[in-house]
Length: 279
Ligand code: C2E
Ligand code: CA
Ligand code: CA
Ligand code: CA
Image (tube, rainbow, N blue to C red; front, side, top):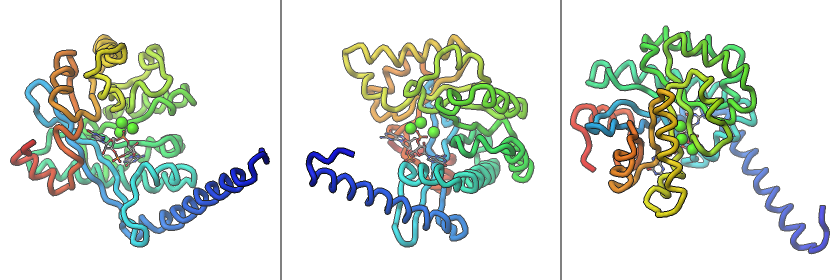
């Protein structure tokens, strides 16, 4: 370690201690969160741009910790990953999402696809595919209504194992989406090899859409590549009608973002099925 500025050194140590303590604290409460029933799911609509029809929702976890209050998934999912807790949390998310999606059949949402985020530590369990299969059979959800969102890093780190598992899942009839596309390193040739039905364009590109510079050309490039490969495209983080108009013109199929709706509670989503929402 560098000693030059003694104060600076101490400052870094303090910062690291604070981060470590926060991690320890989150971990301790996270261990109890499932049994204490502190997790809920919200559902964010995905809208087909041609006609603006609701065709799917993404399940997003929320943690309301008795001691710490609301903690965002960006904070606790990494801790869950590092501690292995992601396996039981991820299993709960998948089961709850499938159970809920099955209920929608009785209230006007029987056609709606449910997308569930899967993290690396969850996906890499040897029994992941059989867990998915047993959740589908216990909830009675048609596999065609389930989409699993994976990320580029999962693929890059272990291509052969990932490919085998994705093929098994695809054979069950489940759809697979590549989340946050454009932020990682997976190439066109990798995407081509995988049984992926959907590409989700990362929200960081939406801000560039309305700019004049070269960044703007990334989105149409992803859209035309995906379309050529026969994949559905979902634009994430659409916040303005200007972005929406540009995406439509570029031939994007589907979008998700605050412009259409924030993530909704299960009961608000059912009202959305019945009445829609005003923007
Ligand atoms: P993600 O999978 O990329 O999810 C999209 C995130 O963008 C969500 O944040 C959503 O609320 C937010 N978002 C949606 N539309 C807009 C928009 O128009 N503008 C802006 N600024 N943001 C928008 P959230 O719910 O905080 O989740 C953050 C991340 O945590 C997710 O990113 C995902 O990586 C992870 N996550 C959430 N739920 C789960 C889960 O059940 N399991 C796992 N493994 N990860 C999850
Ligand atoms: Ca996602
Ligand atoms: Ca995403
Ligand atoms: Ca993201």
